[in-house]
Image 1: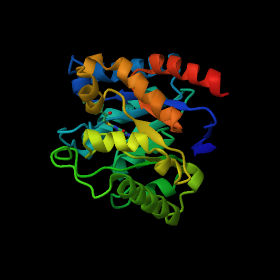
Image 2: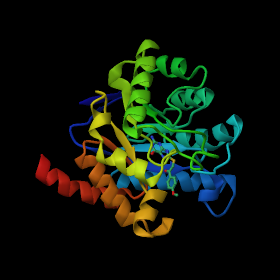
Image 3: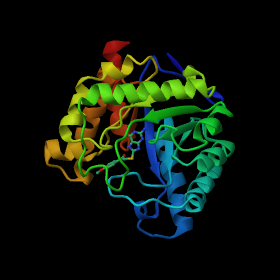
Image 4: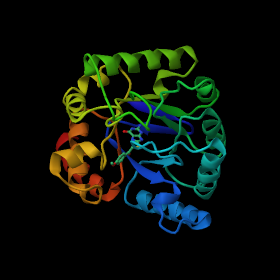
Length: 273
Ligand code: YH5
């Protein structure tokens, strides 16, 4: 399977690693805008050296409880980073649900949109349709501010897969070729531990949708609940989770710890190729 991603064509016959680059002031202790920019660019370059196949640049945290930022603030954070990474050898994904941020980021060199809102914002489908970018359609229940308060499903697997199928259809109707689409069940986005484990166990319900699956488990609370580890001590459990997702046919794993994930997937590749 291939993913069309702007000027890139990603070969998904081997699993790919998406490295996370947060451009939020709280991810860099100095708080200064210029230093945060330099740190984000340096971090991105390090992740590529470590073997990241894709970078995911985000200017607004979508963690549980996080507050939204304005469109202008998000643009001010991500556009200089994209400018600083213009020459980079791997595709860059822009992590946003705002159509104007998508539009400007794609014009500034990004070749994928990672949308936790699955292009449901007014105008988002059209912005992506007018480019050659890939797009990841993710499921969530509720908004980041309240999504972990009362997650509730009649049947988690069919509800998530039906939603993703509807968004694939909506994207196709807007003129986005299926070779540009990814889906993501959205681990931790309005899900209990039981929901998250059921999704990981039943990944085939999502791979059966016919487009590649992206899985984001890195450092998430569910892994803290399973192991009792604080967020800073979740590297091993995150690598284990990424490997499980790949064994269950995820095509892309979204991770903080690129080097360690590369090593784990090398073991998998040595057996599977
Ligand atoms: C995802 O799964 N996740 S942002 C809480 C954590 C650690 C990490 C408590 N964007 C996904 O990474 N995009 C995010 O510790 C995403 N899939 C896609 N496509 C949340 C996150 C995190 C939250």
